[in-house]
Length: 168
Length: 210
Image (cartoon, rainbow over all chains, first blue to last red; front, side, top):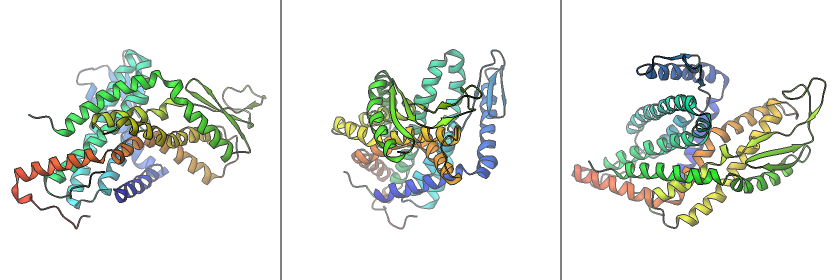
């Protein structure tokens, strides 16, 4: 357990440091954030035509309300935590790679739900928007990461790919 | 279809988190107190040259400094102001309701003692978040205190890590460390399911992992 924790923290700190580098921000994080805004707006337009997206902003064309997707809201940090948790866990590489691919998609899917829900919540009530944005969704995204990781561990256990851990 | 242990755990965790979050939010000023005391001791010892203390106003923590600033937002042109950066504690503190929710969702034995221990264990990380937020304002937003470019990079990293990662990650790590019984039961259940579905798995747990 200690070995897993140490590897997990190390991988995570390195990936988080890499994420903050200028070239990574301009080459990946900012374009990804713009794509996320565009995808969220496209999704919303299925049931609400009065929505547009530019740069990292989703905006209502009826009341002008918009949300800008900032660092911390683009799911990159949550994905980094999941990547570190999967890489640090003792398992064969093939299920690790599968877990990373499926897990990151699952984290990003919940993040899109978060963006869309905050976009409408903000148009309804800014106090609830702040509450959900600062506390509620932050924790829910982490719960999402935890559950994805647990489901991956469950898969490993069902396939007989991990040993039984010792209870505390 | 039977709800799996993970699904049941997730639903309970969300329900408990919502309940604990509301209670914690109502107790905002009270839960800010330990952090303000620890932060006061921390900044006074780490930056004795310019940090003079910490004031608490509800859930807002104000760092008192002797740093003078000019030409920043809120200061009229030609005038000098003393910098007192403010930080809202709550955005660094919601790990406590998350930890309690996880303990309750996993039916952790002795969850009250574990929650109390967890609350203490969370404090240094909350102080990290608040302190780096102050430092960001002092070193990067206003440039009021002289820090080298490398120190500014470290402050930016510490701030981002303290804001984006630690508040949610630390409670989950504490929960995993404090309730390993849940993880063991969870892996055991999955292993048994796997053996029932595919008897060839029996005894197939292994070494040689990457």
